[in-house]
Amino acid sequence: MKMKGKILALSIIPILITSFISLLVSQYQFSKGLYQEIEQGLRTVAISASNLYSTQGYGDYALKEDGMLWRGMNFNVSDSFYLLDSLKEKTGIDSIFFYEEIPVVTSLKDENGIRKTNFDSLKPVIDEVYTQEKEKKKKKIEIDKKEYHVYAIPITQPDSEKIIGSLVVIRNTEQLKILKTRTKLTNIMVLLVLLLVFGTIANFLVKSIIRDLTKTRDCLNKLAAGELEQTFMVTKKRNDEIGDLANDTQILQEKLQDIISKIKNGSNMLNLSFADMNGTVKNTFDKQ
Image (cartoon, rainbow, N blue to C red; front, top):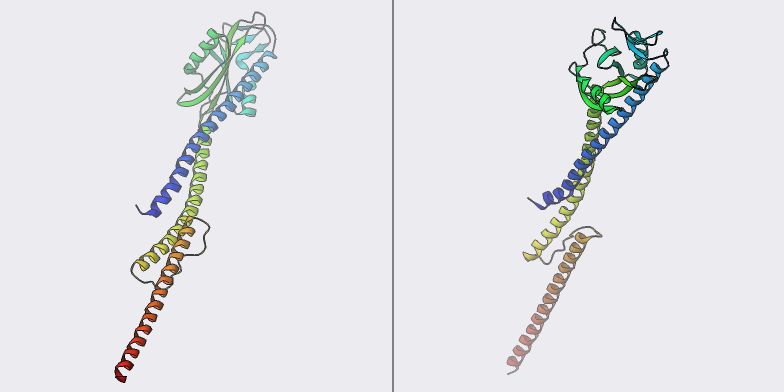
């Protein structure tokens, strides 16, 4: 590999490695922060839904023989679709009200607008709410071949505080995946632009260094070949080591020329002296 390639590699490779690591770290931090925001949003919606039900009717929850869940005698929980639908319209988040492990009411619908009833994949979350008696969160739970982030809070009887169900809120991960992909592509584009800019600058600087080094080398080659009488302009003024090398080469060239000039002058003087001696000797012989 020539010097230009080596210098470019030394310039670009560290930037490339640093940029790649920065991309990974920023993507991880973005994903982490995004999920924290989603988790907080799900919890807020779950608490809001729970508060909505706590203000409807009075008395304990009870499952009637016809399968309808009532709170006291004046609020039919099984018929409270409007509450969850209104909440979804405002937040974009679906909710499911569970009595024990039975899904009583939900805002989640299929492509045909029919409310879904199969939530078997949520049973582990509901069981943890019952057994641990606290809020639970889960990532990427599949419901009808779609992934959702899930947050569940316990529902208790107003009088006894006994846990009788769960209010589960879910958010589809598809839009979040799209957002993460767009963010990743944006980061990659920014990285490529920065690499292009740094690469262009590095290439310009390397060309300048190689050009001046080449001029200095050519000058030294000509001096080595005996071309001592011509003056070669090595490079323009540079305030760096390359400039110092060029200046030293220029000084070497000037000193060699000065030496050659002195040698020539000395040779000319010797020739003149020799001519004078020849003239004197000839005159002496002529007089004899």
